[in-house]
Length: 42
Ligand code: FES
Image (cartoon, rainbow, N blue to C red; front, side, top):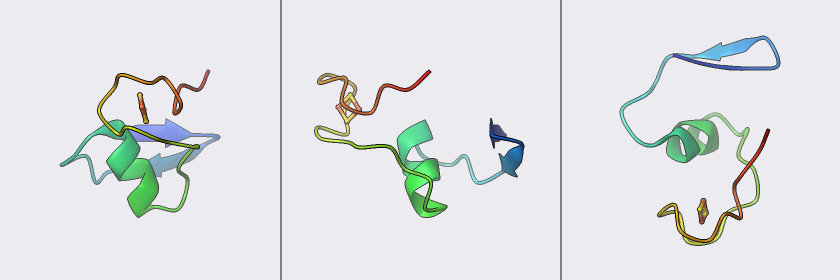
């Protein structure tokens, strides 16, 4: 389960970034592999 700004997403079959992208909540991304840091959010 992922919660972003009070919205809960239960589709966690992929990476956190993949789940957010599937729900149109994706941050900026580049490598999609955890190396570049482009998708880092707080
Ligand atoms: S897109 Fe997330 S670390 Fe590169």
